[in-house]
Length: 262
Image (cartoon, rainbow, N blue to C red; front, side, top):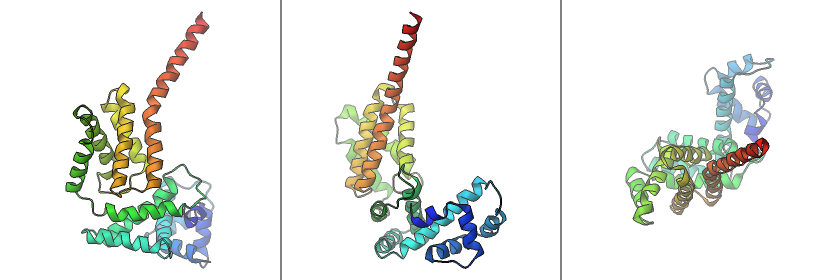
C-alpha cells in the first residue's frame, strides 16, 4: 500500500490534514483530491468527534486517497514514466486520458487492497509490473481475445477443449466484461465460483489446472507480469482444491461420528 494511503486510513489524520495547512506533498495531494470530490470535505469535517464513521464515507475517502496516491506516483522518477506510457497507450488505442488515469488509479488500489500482504508495505516492483501491463492491455480488442481463446483451446486434444472454453470464458467474463484491466484475485475467485456451478465436482481440479494454464497463456501475451501470475496461480490452485478438501474433512467427520456411536 502506498504510504499516503496507509497514513490516511485513519479518518482523524484526514481531518487534521484538512484543518491545517498541508505539511507535506502527500497531505497536499490528499487535500486536493478531497476538495475535487464535491462535498466530501464538508462531510469529513462533519464527522469530527464521532466514534463511528459511515462505510460510505470511508469508501469515498479510500477512493480519494487512491487518487492522491496515483498523483504522487505520477510524479515519482521511477513510476511516473510508466504511468505516462500507460495513459499514452490507452489514448493511442482510442481511449481518453481520463480512462487511462482511471486504470492507473485502479492499479494503485489493487496493489494496496487486493492481496493478503502487509498493508504497511508498498510493493513498488509489483505496481511497476502492473503499470507496464497496462500498455499491452490497452491494445486488447474483441478480435484479439477471440483469437487468443481459439489459440489456447487448440493447444489440447479435442476432448479437453470444452473445459478450456469454459475456463477462458469464466475468467474473461469476471475480469474483462467492462473492458480489459489487470486480472485480480477477485476475478480468479469469481471464475472458480462460476466453474463450480457449471463443471462436475470431480472435474473442478482439472478446471483449476486449466485456469492456471490460461493465466500462463495470458502472461505470455504480456497481459500480466510474473509476480501477478505467481499470486493468481496460488489463488487458483487453492480455490480449485478447496471443495475437495471440504469433502475430505466432511468424510472424516462422518467417520468420527460413527466411531463415537460404536
